[in-house]
Length: 258
Image (cartoon, rainbow, N blue to C red; front, side):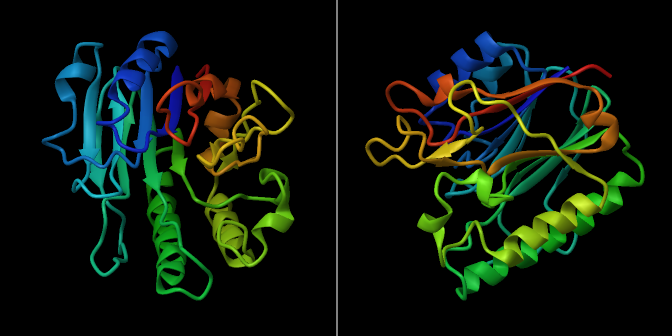
């Protein structure tokens, strides 16, 4: 089974690239983030022509998540247990069981800057995610949480730790929140890079950042030991970040043999 996660940074703007990537990579299930699409506006017909069903959670603004699957979409859940809002809950999490594997597609709030209300919202959201996943683990031993976490787990996951001093994405409370999520029973499935020595998944659009590999690993795959132990390959599809008009994130692709 091949699963993947990709922050597409607008499914409408990136649709031709998404469709080509689905044809070429042929994943069984993909978790998408930052779709910026309502359920009605999502390109169901276009991805449906490739054999995929879609579970969408979106309100058409800057967030939005989806799961695209050709191996079934059962027990779809939108949102988290006790989910905080800013001020209202946003479309940032959707779950479905695909081919016997429980998948969560998540788009963690950015946080803006330490001390900001959005930073507190980010930490509260991650706490709600931990509680939701912990409850789901009781009935789903084959489970993975995939998405744009907007947190680099370690200093090795950023191109220059000094460049992020006093910034979000690297602070101890954010990393502690990730550790609490992993402690619920998940393993960090670290992909291999296709180039360079670090499996970064995000590069700012500023000129030269991608080509210099000045990036971050913030698109993560957290899986149960049953899934992690069945991984046969995991890689950052850096090629999807190339060319004209890409997302600023690259997909992470994971092959598992259950």
